[in-house]
Length: 280
Ligand SMILES: NC(=O)c1ccc[n+]([C@@H]2O[C@H](COP(=O)([O-])OP(=O)(O)OC[C@H]3O[C@@H](n4cnc5c(N)ncnc54)[C@H](O)[C@@H]3O)[C@@H](O)[C@H]2O)c1
Image (cartoon, rainbow, N blue to C red):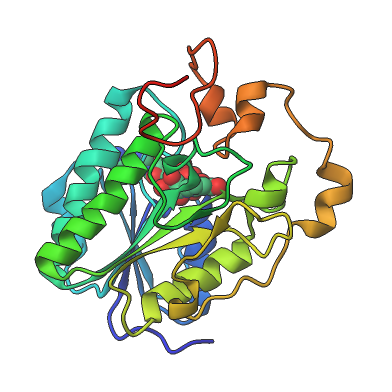
């Protein structure tokens, strides 16, 4: 167990898949949680936790709920690819409310970003955390925006943020792509503990993936500064999963997988990288 933060932690998206995982693991650490979601919490409340139904679009309520909190673990919002109008409220306006709350409370934001903010990087690449954003849909675009919001509030207001580009946080990996992208629930929980309790973070990025041997895509992030080292690995699943591929060339070409092929309308893939001056 780590020492509990001095102030309560505000957890958004608490009723979701990862929200429920973190509600339990952070409560087990002895932390006090102020939880919210647009849908009710579907389980008995963990120890030292309160829960309020709220829409991230409702800035007044978000500001009020965050009062007195020292960190905001922000998981709430649209978590898959959806039409732009559906993403807009929770992920764009809602993010602004989260950062305004953080500014007022001098709270650190732990933002559940996503690999889909960089989804159109090819799987043959090895990219550092400072790579170009190449979002693979409106959802991924909203995550790039969220990370940039963190930079804005750090440089302008001194608000700290840890932007976790989560790969695939599942109970266990279920396809070949996840041999690279899987993040175990245990590693996720330990990462959030490190991100909240680290003395200083500035605005930084961590790849949210376990210690996967095939994890050659992502490197150079802030994990060492936060004191986080993943301990789980997708490697033991390699035998059963390496053949679990889709057969879709767009999906298999890019890090974002199936999100890249959703609604894809190019006749041939773009050349790798940005600024290729129109060369196809
Ligand atoms: N699970 C993964 O593998 C993964 C990968 C990359 C990023 N992420 C990010 O991590 C976070 C949690 O993911 P998850 O898998 O638990 O998703 P989830 O969809 O289960 O949880 C998201 C929660 O946000 C809530 N929400 C949606 N709109 C809202 C609104 N307008 N106001 C308030 N709450 C609202 C939903 O009710 C839901 O409970 C998300 O931000 C997601 O984008 C998850």
